[in-house]
Each structure stands twice: as structure tokens, then as C-alpha cells.
Length: 188
Image (cartoon, rainbow, N blue to C red; front, top):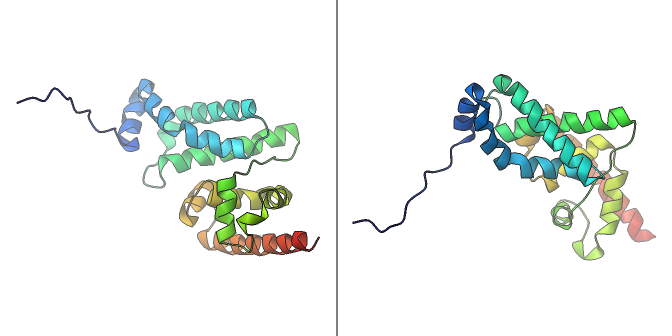
């Protein structure tokens, strides 16, 4: 007896879609639809302009399409591969313009930072936002991936190509430095 409800097939995995897209690029669209929001958020957090972030995100997917044959699903998840491409696009963008990165910090990310530092969310959003803006780009990138991108150390390693132990040490030092900066702001 039929109930009249049709069940949809489960969404294909990235690996299944990639396998199809390698022989026919029309199958790339589900990957784009699935991962565009994450890639855009990552790029936008390092940009000052929404349009530039959208353009760079589009470039990421164009490059991914062109390099899909080189993606190795056994090395890292597809989204990490995309974020590594996005990272290179953002750094290239700033290199071409000879300008410094600008960052966008969300309240949610700052709340997550507060759990690992001496910052209390009740103290406000702007002191930590200012501190984040003062960090060198490489340090901000680690903080961004960990707290705003909610990535694990292993995932950050896959995106940046940096050793996991080095990431842990750098994160510890960055949080210590941020703690000192927060204490200095509190004293003012």
C-alpha cells in the first residue's frame, strides 16, 4: 500500500559527485551549492568588501573545477581542499593590491575565544575585535579557522599545510598574547 509520499534518494557524498564531475563538469554544481556558503564565509572573514569576497569565492570554484583531477580524497576532505585554494586566493588578492588583510569577527566566534582566554563576553565585543585586528595575518588565520570556522587542529593542518604540533604551540602563544592585550585594555 502506497502512502503517496515519495522518498528522495539520499544526497550523494562529495566523493561520488567528484567521481562524476571528473568526467562531466555538469555534476560539479552540487559541490558548488553544498560548499559555497562555507567558502564564502571563510573568504569574507578576511576581506573588507562583500563583492570582493564573492568574486574570490567564485575564483576558488573555477580553480577547483580546473584542478579537480588533482584532488585526492584520501588526503583531506573536499571542503578542506577548497579552503586551501581560498586561502591562496585571499593571500594572492592582498599581494596584488599590496594591502593588508582586513578581518570580520562575529560575536559567536568571540564567545568561543572567551572560553580559551581570560576574556569575559560580558566585557563587550569591541576590545577583542580590536585585538584581533592587531594580530599578524598568519596568527589571525589560525584564530579564524579555530574559533570562527570551528575547525579542529587536524583540519587546520590540512587547510594550511602546517604541522599539527606547530599549530597547537602557535595557538597557545597567540591566546597568551591576546590575554596580555586584554589585561592591558582592562587597565586603561
